[in-house]
Figure (cartoon, rainbow, N blue to C red):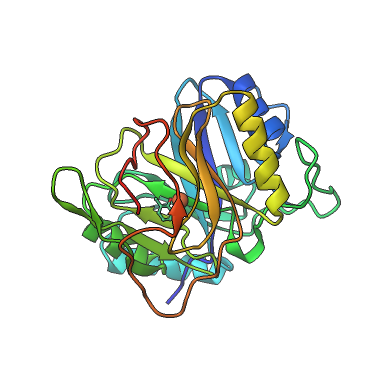
Length: 299
Ligand code: MBD
Ligand code: FE
């Protein structure tokens, strides 16, 4: 069975490119890459050509999620798996693959309607050192762990779990949380490498396709610097600094220029071999600004 190996790239729709350059570059530390295309720029986190494509198309949300497989054999096998599972997909053209700076690509949609791509062989610019958008103490945690994790909107958590298992991710419900209306939220977290989770869902209704992107620093001081910059600019912090029970990362959640969240973090543990579940988090993550989704009490 072919399995995806990492959350490889994201495409974002944005209305305010200038604000995004400042946020992703000047605050978070990503490298801004312009390739002379008028409708998009790129965010670099390591030696890859990019990890994020920012499409200046007037939208403000997720455009697509890119999952990597090891190579062409695995991509073909993945196509057969999708077919066997009754999941429709398209094999992208050479031009579409080139647009994504990869050698091969399938395009499909997950059960929540999230545009999904499965690719192999990203362009890695070995001769171009990573140059962060602001001075950094360290680097982003990427490599085998992919670019971070995303929380996506789904209408049917069981269907979403089945879909991501076909892609080769593993995981299940990790929290049982009391909701204000007396119910129980049971969010699902899934992984495909040492990163504790690469995708999660099941937090209740969401306004946008994506609730947040988590990115991780190698150095605690970069998380601290980002936190200072976010506070200086009076950007909404929706959940304050805290530590999740599942990935044990120190993180906080802040609003990006499109009105959804980024979760900068540090110190995540790797995925345990056996499933666990939690009734709450370790500490912190108090809700400071409501209205961005995931306002559930995590403790
Ligand atoms: C996470 O990364 C997260 O975003 C939430 C809400 C809970 C546990 C881990
Ligand atoms: Fe998260």
